[in-house]
Length: 150
Image (cartoon, rainbow, N blue to C red; front, side, top):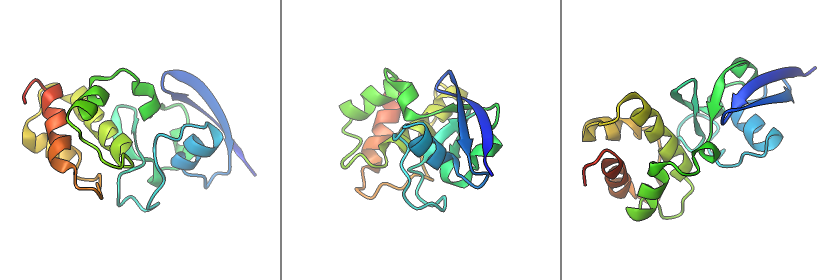
């Protein structure tokens, strides 16, 4: 048995036919072809699957797609020209790049709520995003530059 789920993804109305147990990350990646959010741990430990749902950073591996019926979902593909993307490049805030989409989505949710976050708020926003390469200092520097501080 499948369920038809209507959602808004990156500003566009989308519909997926999913098993009720299908996670949002699987629906995004496999059904909609949006591979920016990464499926790594599947347990909410790494943050690589972070997307924004109704304005809040959420771990898409812990959400069922059916629970997102009628909700607005933003993935990294929806941020093509966002200043955070440019800041990450300029600050060399990634090495392998695997965690980068999740980091950017967590910071995007922070900046949507607070245009001038403190360093403590920046660090807290990405505290659920594991970077195996250790680029944390540059990630914070990228966020500082978007906030207007270097």
